[in-house]
Length: 120
Image (cartoon, rainbow, N blue to C red; front, side, top):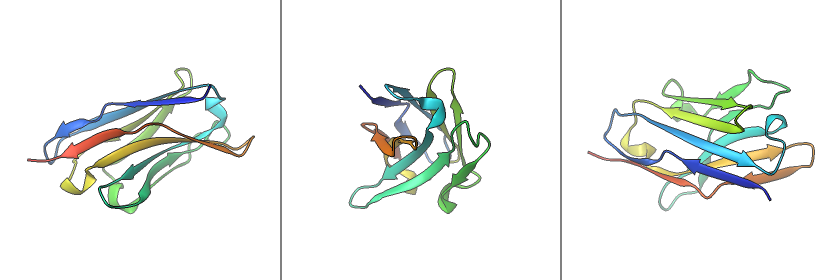
């Protein structure tokens, strides 16, 4: 049974930081590209950051709006992907979702999401 469980969301003031975590199980984590998406109220789900699998361990990419503020990383020994979010802005408020792309089987998996609210 595939599971992606996000944690670390919450309420933070502008300029603050949060670290999201997504613990994976039920598939080959190390061989899966992992990414974070977010969905603000009334908007679509957008890619925030991606980190490739063990095949390309140094590849990361970010949405322009978060470059220089967010960092994605992974710990294959813990089957966990992280999103460090610094200098948070009001517009970062959204539900953040973890996604796994298991290329060997052409399958995509989603977590249930964690709410991030940036407010003064």
